Length: 130
Image (cartoon, rainbow, N blue to C red; front, side, top):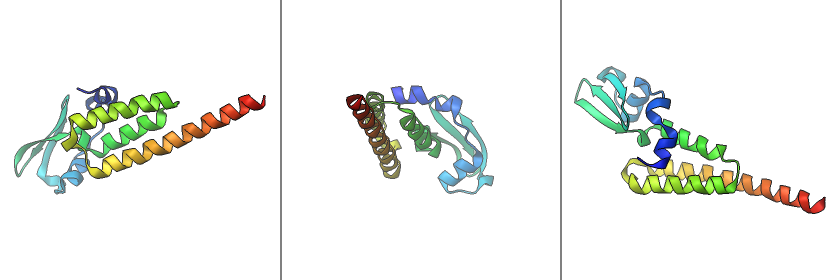
């Protein structure tokens, strides 16, 4: 289990509906009997193919939770540490990340980086003026 996974705690914190899973799998909702959130994966019991396991990392909630963690970073060192945690998680679970989610998270991280740099520059300018 990676540091990122431990901090997000998807099994406890994600609220995953049958509709969410049906959209992700591109199947009608009536084919899903139940969805179970296990410690490391989501188990989907389907009428047509039996059971199916889905990684939390493939869910929209994962992408949104990571983006939220990025936006909560209050300084650049904290953002850099989170970036390293994301990179480690990605390297270990490459197949579970889509290109779109990687690009989205990169964009959010760069926006946060720019915001934090601007705040730092303003703080530095204020201290040199005073």
